[in-house]
Length: 192
Image 1 (spheres, rainbow, N blue to C red):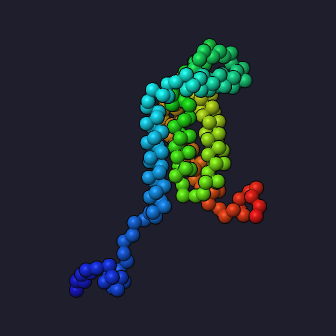
Image 2: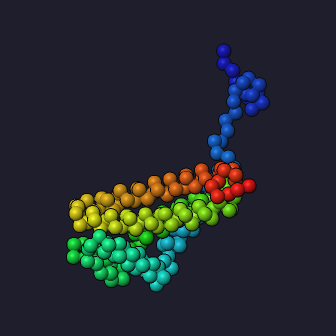
Image 3: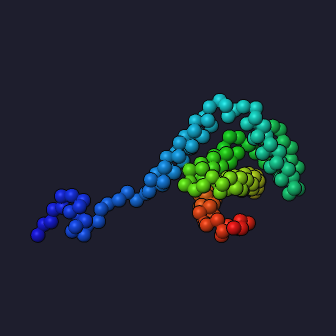
């Protein structure tokens, strides 16, 4: 016996379930906002505006901080603009070494999330700061890989740490979502 169902009403009458799109309208809106924000970010990154003196100064600041941290481990360091020199190994801080892309991905995900405005501010500030600090750990670790395991430098730099940053941005966002979607009275430091 073959049963033909001609309408949704007939399908429901026969017990068949109607197929529904698995993402809510809020979810679709969040995806669209995320894609638009990332498009704007990449549009800005790939313009001459990101090669400004301010951006170069930011890279030089990262180099100075990394040089200082490496110096704490007893290495003789000097920094020339965006290059950290040691007798053992030198690093140049270039676009991509700045953690701006994973931070932008994280920020776009937070901004696109369908939650209120106020939980987004601490999420953006704390998550971005954590990404920037981990980036310093990444660069310092690359120095030590370059000194002690130079043959592994490119793999660690281009594969391991890049993948790790994608995962970190997703994990930070997931942790923030868990915090941001809890009822107000359950958030630490918020008393009703």
